Length: 152
Image (tube, rainbow, N blue to C red):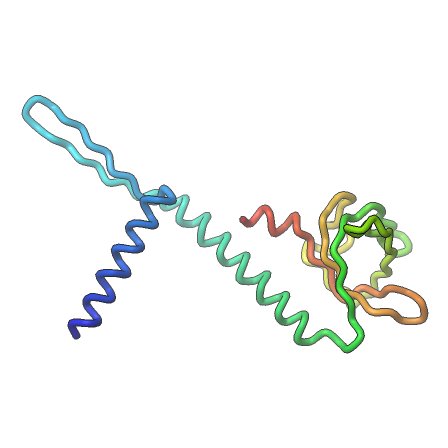
């Protein structure tokens, strides 16, 4: 029982310390002639933001793990920046880090994390998981880093 109490006290101390460090908690004091006033403020808005960011990061990690576990043999992954989106023919071009332009064709089963092809924008940094079929790069999934940055 003593160990449990010590662990709980240590965890509380760490939580309070982190809370002060990241601005969740503030302590202000005022000294008057005959009195001393202390105020303790809890910023629940900052706590909620941190919770939402952590949840988004956890969802992204889960998606990436699920994607790699369920990816069929022969899939490849590339990172780059979208340079062209052709909505009518369902393809996009990505410029890779080594300045190679790659064209990808979307299928109805392609998974895009920002709401379909209309959610993609030229200039977005993306990770594309794809496979080759009949000479075409067919998209399995696209993860847009813009969505990740907004969450962090």
